[in-house]
Length: 128
Image (cartoon, rainbow, N blue to C red):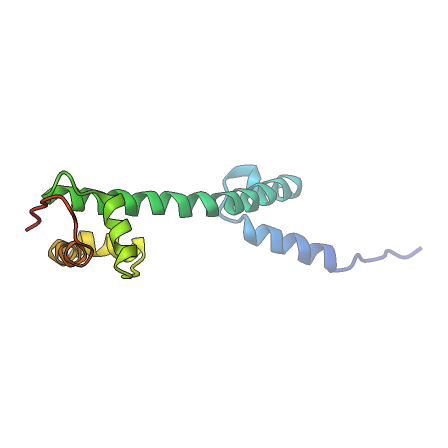
């Protein structure tokens, strides 16, 4: 009997998997069974951590905004600021507010002062 050469489909599939895990260390990038396990694990972790990344960034933005808002006035905080933004119908998301808080604090102070004037904050708040 003559020798039968195997097809290229399985080899092509394994090559694609090897390209995916080429940066992994040791057997995780060399052995086919280990490659498949690590690929599944990596994709699972990536899927799981996308949600936690969104949560972590939202927490970071909220912390940054709160820190800058409280810097000038102790009684005015993040939750009141966001509430007043919604009451004043000024729709800025937390990411943009956090960038403004870091890059241009005076601009955020101006926004908060205008919001306080619009809404009519009852306590005497002396934001400069």
